Structure formats: structure tokens, C-alpha cells
Length: 522
Image 1 (cartoon, rainbow, N blue to C red):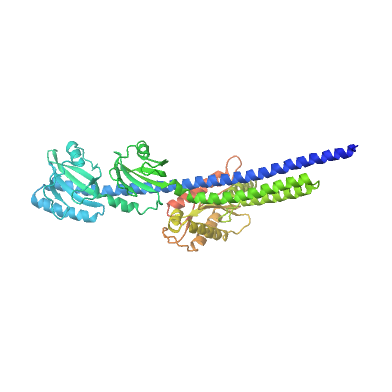
Image 2: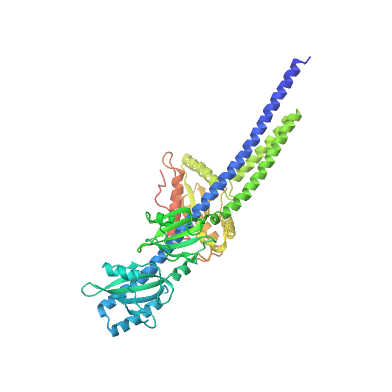
């Protein structure tokens, strides 16, 4: 007969075993799921940041391309205005045309984008041009631009369809203006032909990767040119493309789509020219944008997978030991303690930036909230410095992302060397931007510390060819506040320091500025 007390003890042990088994299994699953979630969140955030940086890059390229096209056409149109005024003032006598020929030759040699300058009479015959010799029996009355000006009287430039020049055979984009007789009737056309290869040479200066693309498109849905140039690029209809449809309703925009030209999925940014009926678009391959992120994600996922596998194995091992031995409680406690230590280690790592070993954004937010509340209680001043690397995107473009990472490490160490108090916090705020929390510090003290940081980084003398100083520099914004409860929030201090950083950037970079807009005292 079984002793009731022993039976109760056995039942108690079994219940305890089942409870411990459930606890261990639940704990292991929670840790594994937490690791997977944290890594997934980190990966998603990194992907989002990578795409945002690419959006800024393509938008800047589109702006530069549109400005270049605007300036190129403007220079040609300015030359045409002078030609039209000369003809309408001097007439078309032989001496006048001879003087005009010399002017056209000189203007063409001065403007690299010009393939030639031409003047036609009302019948389309060549009156004068910038060529060394006048071709015979050439008539351009059938050209798009000639027909347009013959039927339109407005005094404005006309951007014609891309054509192959009859004088050189090269593809050109035409800019033309109408010439009138004294009575206002049609007297002919002044034409500037812009070498399309001039645009292509400029576009070759952009780093687009292997599958990036640049297009210059007329608002009539005609492709002027493309980089890389395809066999049918010039003059191709763009009416059914997404970039043309998007551009019809907005002056600028960003979108992702599979290219109608070659099927590559790209992040596109387009922008209309300010003065002429064209728009430019810069596009980067999404696959190339995310290549570095994808490699990093694979690496982290593999590490997390191995860690999850190890944790799972340990968990199941502990469960087996609980089932086999009565003293599994001790092993379970030891395993639980080990897991807690691991969680603490993970917590510490989650508050530190892996690259620079500074406090990360999460740590910054926590400490700023704590110091803000302490400053309210003590009625003391709290200062914040925001600084980032000048032209860091260009630095990465020139020297590569590996060198960029090393640059951020050096900057972090230089900033840490300026730290004088244990209570101050230097954090990587995001990308190439850093923040310094200075408790019990007024704005003058913060300005001094910010200047020390700026000088320390400049003294590193890290080469930076795209920066005006030739070396890596930083710009800093400083603000300080004596916060009041229910009146001030930490975000106001961040925004004020960030505004001061913007002022430093706008006024020339490599400097420290403060913001005057935030109330300093109660």
C-alpha cells in the first residue's frame, strides 16, 4: 500500500516537474522569439534607412541633372536671342551675314554643348551658320521646329524633337526662335543644335552602380537621352512609361517601379526643369541599393539562427534532465540564471552602437528623458549638442562605406576624448549624426565643449576630397534650457539643437552655432 504522504510527495514532485518543464519551455521560446523579433526589427529599420538614404541621393541627382539641362539650354537660348536681334537690326545683306557668320563660329567655340548655330530664311534655306563652309542645296523647311515657328508667332524658344543633324550626322536637341520681318511676318528661324552626347558625358560623372539609369525626357513624352544609352534610346516614345505618367501631375516625385526599358526594378526620382518643357529622372537599382543591407541581414540572421539553435538545444536538454532526475530544480535554476545574464548582456548591447561603441539612439532617448526630469526637479540647465559629418555621403561615394565606417569610429574616439565628466553622454544619434547630453551646463559651456569636439575632429586630418577644407570636419548645433514641468519637453531641446545644426550647415559648415528661439529660463 502506498503511503499517502509519499504519494502526495510524488504527486507534488510530478507537479513541480511539469511546472518547471513548462516554465523552461516557455522561457526558451520567449528568448528565441525575442531574439528573432529584435533581429527582424533591426533588419527592417536598417532596410528602411537604406532606402531613405537612396531616396535622398536620387532626389539630389535629379535636381543636379535638371539644373544642368536648364543651364545648358539657357546658354543656347541666350545665344539665339543675340542672333535674332542682330538679324532684325542689321538685315541679311552679304556683309551683315559675313559678320554674323564670324559671330556664330565664335559663339559655338565658346559653348561646349553647341553642335552648331544656324539661320534659315522664310523658305527654309540656310542663310548663315557656324560651319566652316556653307553646304549647298540644303533646305530645312520640313523640320519640326521650322514648321512650328512658321505657324506660331509667340516670342519664346521652342525645344524641338531630337534629330540627326544634316550637317554632322550626330544626334542633337534643337532650340530655336522665330525671326520676323519688320511688319511682324515670318522671316525665318534661328537654331541652336545641342550635342546630346554633351548630356551623356555629364551623366557619366554620376555613380549609378551597374543597373542605375538617368533619363532626360521632353514633356511631349519623347526621350532625349538615357544613361546607359541603348540603341533605341534617343527619340523613343515614353508615353506608356510610369515615369512619364507620374511626371504629368507633379513637379517632382519619388517612386519604385520595374523599368519599361529593361525590366530592372529601380527607385526613381524625377524633377521638371524650371524654365523649359523637359524633366530629368535619376534611378538606382533597388537590388544594388539593398545589396549591403542584404549581406548584413544574412550575417545577423545566421548568427541569430545559431544562437536560437543553441538556446533551443539547451532548453530541451534541461527539460530532459527535469524528466529524468528529481534534482532538475537546481539545474533549471542555474539555466535560468544563465539566461538572465544573457538577457542582461543583450540589454547592454542594445544600448550601445555596434560600430562606434558609443551610446545608441535608444540609450540617448532614455538618458535625455532622465536628465530632463532631473533638470526640472533641480531647476538646473540642461544642454544638448547635435553634430554631424560634413558631406559624409560624398565621403562614402569617394572612399567607400568601409572607409566611412572607420571615419565614424575615429570621430567617435575624438569626441570621447573631449568628455570631461562621467555624467555627460555622447551618443550616435543616427547615420553620421551624433549627440552630446550635458547636464548642469549652460549654453556658453556647451558652445565651448562643441568647439573642442569640432577642433579635435578637424585635427585628425582625415582626407576628404569633397570637403572645402580637404579634411573631414563636422558642424554642430548647441542649445541649453532650464525646463519647466508641463511647459517644456525633451523634443523641443532636440529640435532647437537640430535647428542650430541646420544653421551651421547653411552658413558654411565646419562651425558651431546656437539657436536663439528656445526660452532658456522659467
